[in-house]
Amino acid sequence: MLQIIKIEWLKVKVYRTFWILLGMAVAIIPASNLIVQDITSRIPKEARTLLGGTAYDFPLVWQSVANVSSYTSGIFSLLLLTLVTNEFTFKTHRQNVIDGWDRRDFVFAKLFWVLALAVLALVVSMLTALYFGFFYGEKAFSAEGISYMGYYFLQVLLSLCMALLLAIFVKRAGLAIVLYLGYIMAIEQLLVLTIKRYWGSIGGLLPLQAGDELIPFPLGSIGKMMPGLEQYDTSIYLLALFAYIVLALWLIFRRLLRADI
Amino acid sequence: MPILSLHNISKKYGPVQALSQVSFEVPAGSVFGILGPNGSGKTTLLSIVTDVLRADEGSFTLFDEAPTAKQRRNIGTLLETPNFYHYLSAYRNLQVVAGIKQKSEKDIARVLELAGLTARQHSAFKTYSLGMKQRLAIAAALLGDPDVLILDEPSNGLDPVGISEVRTLVKQLAQSGKTIIMASHLLDEVEKVCTHVAILRKGKLLLSGPVNAVITRDDFIELGCNDNTALKTLIGKHPAFVQLSATPEGLLQVIFRTPVDPADLNNWCAQQGIWLNHLQVRRKSLETAFLELTNN
Image (cartoon, rainbow over all chains, first blue to last red; front, top):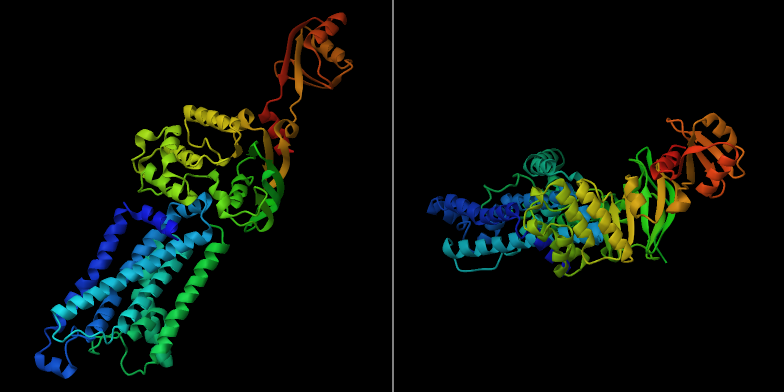
């Protein structure tokens, strides 16, 4: 695996697009939280007391940062889509296999990025939460609610797995990016709204929504949830996230191990 | 031990039968040409061997064992087009190849020199001409000095000097004992370097084996005199006569059952009162033999 990581590193070391996208994906986490922090800090003190504190006080800061960061995690997926579709565009995925990679090695190489980017998103979000909690919050450090970071990590992991699946099936960069953005920005939201309206809470079990349901904005009104519907137990959403990740991995392996490349 | 052994390989692209029950063996140390017109299945066959495509039916062995990625690391392959990372330099691209092949990066300088790319090794691949890209692909195939090479149309995109250089290189590699499997539609190329051939047409294997056994190219003798009609009648009476045809220039091309000494033939004609003014031993070109084979 170390050998695979070394080769992937050689591929991106001097790839400017990669570093620009990565820089953006990382910077947007504290930046978007800064904007939300700025907005929430303008809530009058009386209202804040009613709400039970500010969104960036410990321990709510974990949930707030997880929620806000989840809106921008798509950039990590765009980065992954670029990396993977590049291989298909330049036909280097073929060359890697011709030169002596097992097809599995190619999948592992891309799964390395899935994991690495998800871990990076988690680390940056945790550092952001710590920074905002210490510098903007008014309460002492607390790790209570740090599990929201875990939910955020799982959601990023799933969105990256979905991006990898899409890249492997679509192969073309432009189309894959349009389809991905279309799905996360409109298609899934429409499906969630429709299913929730006609069939109830089950709409919350769609892939990315399952993560959203686990990390609502702590002060309620700004969250992504549709009010008035009961939520399932946390374990159901977690199970859905795991199931989607396993399904995506199974499809990725099946496709790359069986099909002509 | 055969380097590559194919057993009834078949492959379909939708309704198109790209390969049909192809079987042959590539002996160690041979320069094995896979011949066939465009669309005959040469690249499909090599793609299956390199695990890019999956055969619908049949199997193959590499080095007498079931094929694995580890074996491919010890085969230098140039398949179809040169595939490299456009934003990386030649050197960095070869670092990736060396990493995958698990070969030392120290060999990069040697193969770049062999391919004539040392001066441009730090330029991005996207800035390369077609010929330079092909040279880089050849350099990548030679990385780690593999004992077996698979070269699919290796002189594609090269200028005449480049073609000649590749030919010389292939010959040198063959002389050093390497096994080379080369797909080509350039018969001239094959004639000059191959010891064995397999001929494909529309996905079917027509013949395979040593070049001279597969493509029989009988020697023939071209004759002419002042009265070719009389010569035609006379030559038909020669004890070793087999077949006769005429060239557009009116000369007679005669195939004999056994090798005939030109001096003896000249003497024999003279004894019968025919004085030859043209006598030349010739050989059917590989191109003619190949066209006869693939058109029938």
